[in-house]
View 1 (cartoon, rainbow over the protein chains, first blue to last red):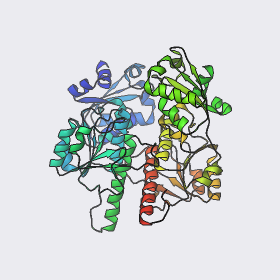
View 2: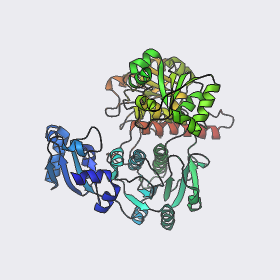
View 3: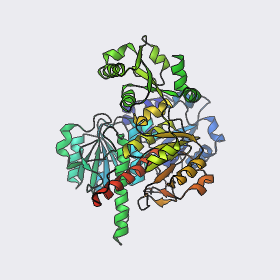
View 4: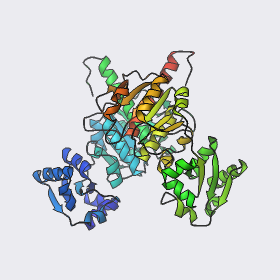
Amino acid sequence: MQRLRRLLRQRSVRRSDGAFVVEGTKVLEAALDAGAAIEAVYFAPEAHRQVAAARLLARLEAAGVRCFALRAGVIERVADTTSPQSLCGVVSTLERPLEALAAAAEVLFVCVDVRDPGNLGAIIRSAAAAGVGGVICCEGSADPYNPKVVRASAGALFSVPIALGIDAAEAFSALHAGGFTVLGTLARGGEDYASAALSPKLALVLGNEASGLPVELAGGLDGSVSIPMASATESLNVAMAATVLGFEIARRRRQDAATKPGAPSI
Amino acid sequence: MQRLRRLLRQRSVRRSDGAFVVEGTKVLEAALDAGAAIEAVYFAPEAHRQVAAARLLARLEAAGVRCFALRAGVIERVADTTSPQSLCGVVSTLERPLEALAAAAEVLFVCVDVRDPGNLGAIIRSAAAAGVGGVICCEGSADPYNPKVVRASAGALFSVPIALGIDAAEAFSALHAGGFTVLGTLARGGEDYASAALSPKLALVLGNEASGLPVELAGGLDGSVSIPMASATESLNVAMAATVLGFEIARRRRQDAATKPGAPSI
């Protein structure tokens, strides 16, 4: 229990152990479905009385995952939320080298100083939904294994390849070497995303919630895009901006596939 | 203080008083800029030592708003958040009749059972950013004056016209009478939004986070749209779906304005 609590609360422990905690039936089921390495699962007495949780426990045991019964009240003392789920699991971290993402993906999100775990989780969820091939979390961004990120990603953490802990300038160099165009996303002043090229291979750089992208990184960008707002005082948060951009790229892919018969549908 | 606390916590008090609480410098500034009726403002001793808060207090006093100094620690006991801002204001509620929104707007969002205040706030924020002309909160949806909605809307609550407390089926009838096409948004099974007409006057109906739109309302819809996902297991939350749809409409408007010289730019 002490280990669970530390994995939930301390990024350094998650990094040194190469593991993190997944809370709740839905997200743990996504981990199992995605073939993630589930080290162990812990469940409260009520889990066996809940249809979805009981079914998941049966699947986990059939898959050879060690499942441990906890006494009443224990999971409540460990959990990250005030209304904890009836089960949680310890799962091996999932990150891959940036080079592997760059080789496999047509489109990537690059997070630079995205600090809010809810935003990072929503960005990962949108990436999975829009078919963005990976999310690179540069140094300074929230930890994708933070329990708030895991929750906000709604299981998408297990379907989108993640790279992390990379210096932003080094990431841009590696992406250029991999044939990517690297575009910054700015609150205002960039090219209208709707008329911008956005052709793969494309890396979209998402910046800090308050301050945007640091000016030192400007030299590493091939250009920048903005989402025009209805008026100067309005704004979108970084996760919503990522959602708009990710789905614009997906929309163009479907359009291209429809107008070029024989072209591969992605 | 008792009144502030009740306005923050009880929807019925907000409704009977026709007032709600706005917390924090940024959102209160948005209220002042938008010309909202600010009844009174309460501030903690530290507000005068914070540049933005002190400047806002000066503006409020110049505008004739009554500003009351609170003793240290009082605002912390009243506030809705664990890390409260140094000032808050009581503002008159802003809703307008559905018919007024329908007459003025080209595009509307209609929320049916959108229960999560964070989602409703994000929908209002996206509406403002994308130029959607109003948000109709049908019975069963979160209260737009809930402090969590006010925060999540990031001040957009004061720039987007709101109608509320309307039965969904009655809202659809009134929208049809006002010349609107009423389209449901479905997690799957609707027409691809990217190839759907989406022509004004258009009302996009957003459903419950878990269960979507109730089947009883299907007869009141002129059609439905979905956002295609990269795979069957992925999903977007309702606020992100609204963002994608709102900005697709804005994108087409800009495109139409660019290709039809002389057409009004909206």
